[in-house]
Length: 443
Image (cartoon, rainbow, N blue to C red; front, side):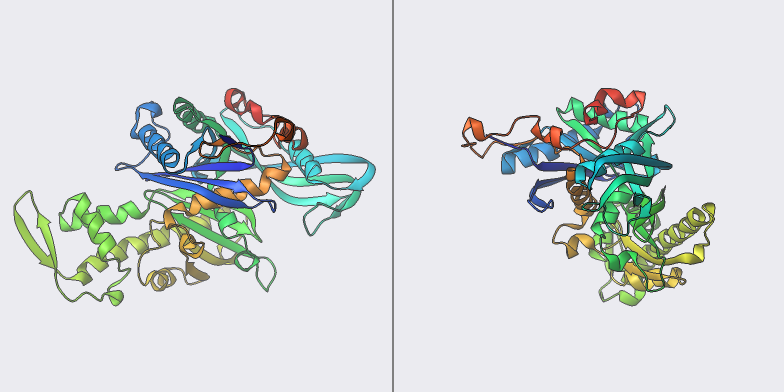
């Protein structure tokens, strides 16, 4: 059996299910996907349930993990977990280290200055999960590019410390521990979205500063993330998603939920202008043993009404987030809508543009663009993000491949703690409630 020392496992726990990706880290620091699985639940997942371990989420996690083991022989014993924008906030912080004697900045140095920035005060009900670098300075001079390689004697950093609700993190950690899986850390949704769209074309503007909104529409919630020139600026979550469309069809047409879900997938028209079906749709009402025919345009109108509602809510909340930070909502340059709760509808861009008129609007299926199922988009962003942070001190996940024989001679096998000696973890000051399961991330 082979222990994949440079591998990352991520688990995206959404309201509609669990998605897992496992990636082997290449020499370039990018992940190569070697395993994936998905498990969907019937009822929305609530990570704040009093007894989360007793909920269907545990069965869902175990099923997803067992599927990977059965199909690939890969056993996951630790992983990174997603956390919704709804449970996190940012706190401004700074950090500084000295290089004596003067020397080129290394990834280890960046990890050290991130560690300094993590020494920030936050509430006992919160725990530190990450650091968002805002600007690096070498000997007081602002660096326009990544700091590695710059020769200086003092490296300083302005950053935002990302803190999450400790009760949410504790609930998830206990659940995974009960399934035999340790929690390597948490990845906020806005980081995952950022990495999926990690291209200057999405986060830049010819006119200089650019505010970009990414709305990740899931089953029951939509995570809204605003970036300024690619740097996380503000974020929130609204309680509406793709499942609301199914519920609308269920209620308006008086059909069972499962039939409503099938109708939504089969006739995925964002508006009646996209309707191509000519034959009437037959509704089955088993409880009264009757049938009724409706026109496809009527179903399209139901779907359209909720898509318009989602777009309006996203636009409104993005404006609130901007103005709460003293910036006019008119400064938003573009909106991107992603997520398996919305991207499958035909004519979606046209409908979104009819609602949001003061910015460029796109509906993007990044999963399809990147050659992976749409529902794995967030998990893919998580995998890319954590893989890029390994050189700064993030630890790889513990992933064992039972199908690979380890033929290396004992002297060629790296020491268990050699990686930890080279890469210091970015966080040292953690909340009291996090110590039991996050302590091993300390340097």
